[in-house]
Length: 120
Image (cartoon, rainbow, N blue to C red; front, side, top):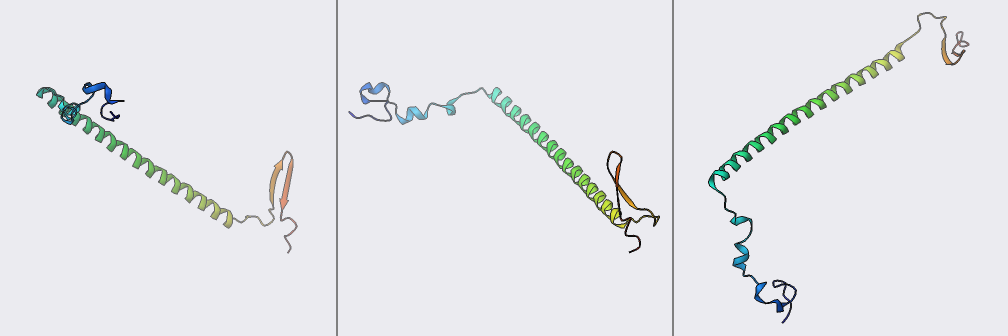
């Protein structure tokens, strides 16, 4: 006899390992019998679990959308402030014509700019 994938490792084990297709079809999850009361209770529990999951998902979607809105508003405010700062830096002129620009470079040291270009 030859080995068959349906009967085990070799065919000499006999009909104990052989099952018809009808016997295989009648076993499994399709034949689980439940009482009608528990089946209805399972449907109700499944409905409530689905409703709760949908509600949590809706709340999370609203929170996520609101956080994106806040992030967008904060980014717009920062961009506006940067634009105002660049505009103020470009437009700013000293009130006193004798005033020179100096930068602190550390310690007691300062560097002055433009002090020798007044007359040019």
